[in-house]
Image (cartoon, rainbow, N blue to C red; front, side):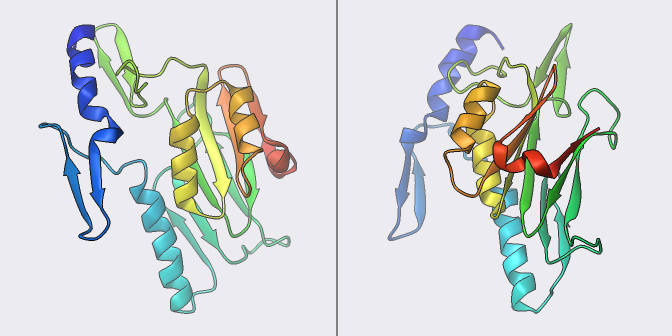
Length: 202
């Protein structure tokens, strides 16, 4: 797509043109051609709902993996009862880790620019877009991981913060209760203070 064509399509992404009717539980989209993609929320919502269902049925231990969205319930088999969650190394093959995060009764949500890509000619496009330009975000961040009690919060904050500078992300995260972050950049790893002693860098 050309820049002018993308600019013309941006009006279809204006959230102010989404009307929500709480009484009828209906959604109205003001512009013809608009649609809603729940990809940035659905997995988190489903994960949290699954945990509630498991608790209701007296399941005391579980590990849910919805691809980039993980959540644990109950203790692990380790002595400290914490689960170890691997963070993918963006420069390596799938399954090769850059770091390990220790969690307990928490969700780990990671967004990154290194897997879902499209190559057109010599240009490679990733799937995280700048809402102002309509093109993929230009950033030195390769992945952003949010650790939080609720998985849907991880979805919201990875989407909201991706593309900001690492120091800005950490500043915001440290101002919000119950969320922590791990950022993989092209040059290294940064974490929020509350997560620093729970991360092993490989």
